[in-house]
Image (tube, rainbow, N blue to C red; front, top):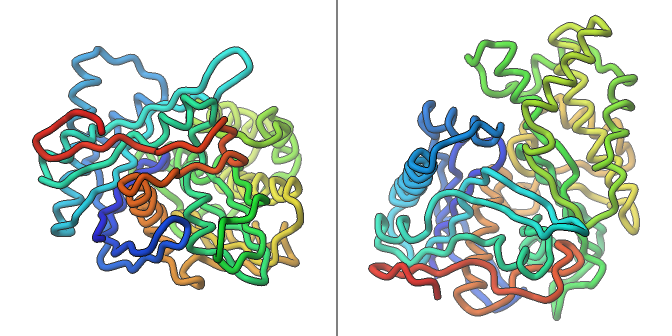
Length: 380
């Protein structure tokens, strides 16, 4: 089945689109990447999304307009790849609230599936997180069961580490991909990925830059371990999994507080970027201390996998681990999340549950996503 996966993460750096041939059943699926590209948001739409993520109030008419504009952008990204039998769209997260003992979770991904279906004339699945959250789960991360199906190794303990705006991991014990996946598979959000680094780069460049290419700017500075230790004391990092987070915690307000603390210690801009990058690496490495065992290999993906300085900081903290990318295991690191959503969409289309209870904390397996068929906006 030819499926287009559409994904824009918390970095809000564009829409990753992948056309994938998905075959097989259940956890025995196989994928072949046929085409892929990244569609940039218009600067004005990206600014509007980031403003909402930073809690800027909007009138309902403006919210509706942005929802439409995101759906149109996603549909255009899909149409660029040609025809498919199904589209699986993650949408754009603008708000994520993990569940607590007092309150159930909530997650909002803009970009209406019914509009994408109409604009592409292709059945579309969207709103993947809602069913897991309704069942008491975090609604995140959703990719671990796909990681298990595509990236498990028969002998090696692996971690798949996505570094988008927010970082998340999947721990994969050895598995030959025969039968059901091992119960020991776990995953959770590790904390900030690129979000704080990108925020600081935009601030220091007066908006002319949106990310630190290869970590070159950060590499000119020196990380401040005192600040890293101070930031690691944040309660999220002490919280046991399952857990998830977003820009609601690690966004502009958090970054501004960090910058004020850095200025009080006379850190330069380069020193601050170096410290933020090392902090991201430290949050990832510290998360691995909660795993059943340290992995033999870590497969990186997402935009942060292209940051050479971040990779070097992570290797310093995981000296005995073989640091790789998912490309080394046959899955594009640049488009891996979009590929994952083709599998999640394929599973939903074939009535296969898409969540892992140990990862999200949901009470039961769920069919993830709402199906919108062409000319019919009624959920399946």
